[in-house]
Image (cartoon, rainbow, N blue to C red):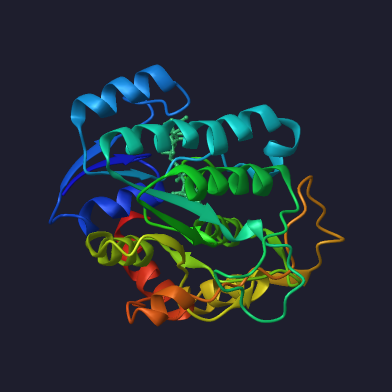
Length: 286
Ligand SMILES: NC(=O)c1ccc[n+]([C@@H]2O[C@H](COP(=O)([O-])OP(=O)(O)OC[C@H]3O[C@@H](n4cnc5c(N)ncnc54)[C@H](OP(=O)(O)O)[C@@H]3O)[C@@H](O)[C@H]2O)c1
């Protein structure tokens, strides 16, 4: 399969390249293709004629989206419509990545693909708008919701990742306060990349939840990072009411990989095992 990989120098994009080595991957960074430019996107992709467009691009500075809704909708919805139109014209597959933040957080058990979204922020609304465009217009699509990504390359959009931020703060001797009232599933981009590679050839199109297994609060996650790295950090829990942010986050956004499990395709390991693997794999680059 010939795959145009968009957002290739992002943290997920970085890990998709080795995961897709069986395929012909054309890696495109923002420099080569700005997805918000419809004319450029159309011309370049029609010339390359990929079988699959794999979109990992997004504007996901969640708090900045509150004051820049036009930028959020342009990147997370209108650009996605551009890709849908090109994918349909190519009769190709669109793989698009969305977020756990589409959920409102009142559930107490993991959200399946059948759960009704209730976005709480501009970012979440813009991503849900992108989802609707994919689901309603794109003939062949994989729409993938994931959560709490961290990877070797670090998030380009957010400037690093949570794991590395925690380790850097601890090494500087800072006192670290992390919310203990938001429950998530941190997900290693390497695992997500391999899971995407696993489903891609199967043509079971549609919506998928794809996260590592299990769940924890951000505070639990920080504790595990320090424990597995053998770092003695000054870490204490705080609450979302104390640590106020411009964008509201769901208090609970754990998702069940229900569709993958139904199809017997779930390869995602527990988040703690994934974190241990990441810390080992990242060590030579730190
Ligand atoms: N990070 C998370 O915790 C998280 C959680 C749930 C879902 N997601 C979703 O997962 C996907 C991948 O996230 P990630 O963490 O891998 O992000 P990332 O590291 O920030 O990578 C995104 C890439 O997209 C590129 N990009 C942004 N706007 C673009 C544009 N207009 N045209 C072309 N390229 C553009 C960025 O390029 P530049 O480097 O030039 O900006 C960056 O390389 C996104 O859809 C995100 O919404 C992320």
